[in-house]
Amino acid sequence: MEVTRQNILSLQIDNESDVGVCRRKAVSLASQMGFDEVKSGEVAIMVTELVTNVIKHGGGKGKLVICQYCNDQNHQAIEVWCCDSGKGIDDLKKAFKDGNTAKNSLGIGLGTIRRFSDEMEINPTLSGDFRNIFFSDNPHISNCIRTLKYLPNKYWMGTNRNLEIGAASRCKPGELLNGDSYLVTHLGPALSVASVIDGLGHGSEAHLASQLARGQIILKSEQPVGVLMQHVHNALQGTRGSTIGLLRIDNENKKISFSGIGNIEGFLFTPEGKKNFLSFGGIMGHNMRTPRIFDFDFNPGDIICMFSDGITSRWKFDEIDWTENSQKIAENILTQFSRPNDDATVLIIRYVI
Image (tube, rainbow, N blue to C red; front, side, top):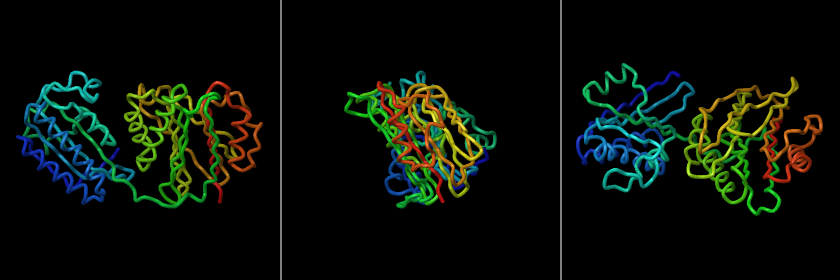
């Protein structure tokens, strides 16, 4: 993937006074790029924790490189590289848990950094040019953390008038809370994100996991699909976990992108036939593979159908009248084909002119 970097700041970390310097420089760049006060504050916290970790745990000396990042899809982000000469982290999984620390501190640094980052890597590969330009004066650098925080799109207050949406969902009979959830959120007049989420099992803990995933998708919906899946996976750690089917719908370019982890099923119905969505095994929040993203053409008249495993997979496509309204279709599928021992959800999206 081709990326560009500009407004690059290279800052030395030598003592505690550098924490404030690095924080102010990062916030200044974030504000210049268009981050609002809240998001700039998150950048400030993230950089404060990174630099503090160098002082307390990374040998006391290091380097912070901050820049404006743009990928080949024109997604803008603030990129932060924080490197030190310490001994590194022996147990990453343990280190990310709040309360874990080897020094006299709260032990919430790495968890906070990950929560406020859209992407985070430990010891990624430094390209030759990047290393030579910005780290050649630090020959003892041995550990790096790289983070990205994407610049959100301007908030869209309207809807996507080319999508006719129908949804039906119910909890397992006898339960009070639904472990499934769904969403359709609009980023612009022709750009939307949709998802069906199934919290593992049923009841209150499944409900908590699915609602947390739903909220994180809405909060970060402007991100690329793969980045958004990774963010949700990180957010769900410590919960029961969930399975997710996630769609990005671009009417303007007549494209959809799908990524799925677990047993969320779905398909695209077009005049050329039925095209199934492919999900991969795993549980968001526990053991997620690297998300795979599949692209499909999406034209007027096409229909998207996604459903949780509370809908039996034995129903036949031709048992449904697809000419009916999307809401009616969703309700019919739920009524006729839901399992009696699980939560169940159906989401129908039709591209209308």
